[in-house]
Image 1 (cartoon, rainbow, N blue to C red):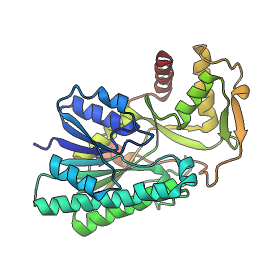
Image 2 (spheres, rainbow, N blue to C red):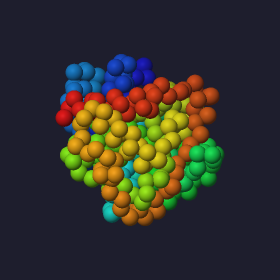
Image 3 (tube, rainbow, N blue to C red):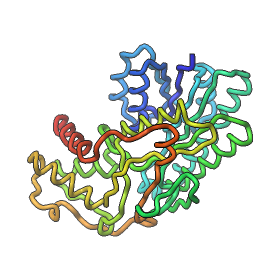
Length: 329
């Protein structure tokens, strides 16, 4: 049976949600993760109840780690969530992003290629490379990027992800590896690392500290709940056409400032912040270098070809996130 999935970066925010869903659906999962600052082992321990779940500490920057995991576990599928993702960090330590998002992807591709060729197996079905809508660069809501749009990454993070994609496409063509690429918009949901915008804002509101907002906060982003993202990845994993790219996103477009204001409103309603005015909470700071004005992707291909659609209403998802955070406070 095609039921064994190797998940790289499974201790991270999105990867851990994916693993939980696949275990609930009856699959056998090996979580391969380097346990960086963005990993959460406490969350993973909740998964040990599943006899079909195992964990190995490994780094996609190490070909030996990857080859050992592949030959021991012998997966039918590989899903690569492993990545450095925080744009601010990429401006400070760009080499870390090169090492993981480019060299790490190269190591993964080489290891999968060697695994398939050496084993001469016919049970390996697909590798899914999880990428980002940021590879398109700035796109307005009126001109969303399709999978056929030119990519134009404008920061270190997006450039590294675009480079990883290029290697994936080349290995699919050169070695006939069954690879699919997904490009998703901004995610939100429970247990997201506090460096990201939404959990960072909620944390600062609770602590009574000001939020540093880049520029005037007019940068627009497209958002999707992590559970909707995972449902799309599953569609692509089992039904996506090999060699294709799929945009993943919901129709939630909002500026950074408007998003902070909405979170502030929910926090005030629950009386979970000492701030009374949004102006007291926000601290305007100089804009980030190379900050894209807006992101926008067209998901028609995924919707029409694979019958996928997002289910979670944005405001409802945000409201639930605020309440869950309050319960843990």
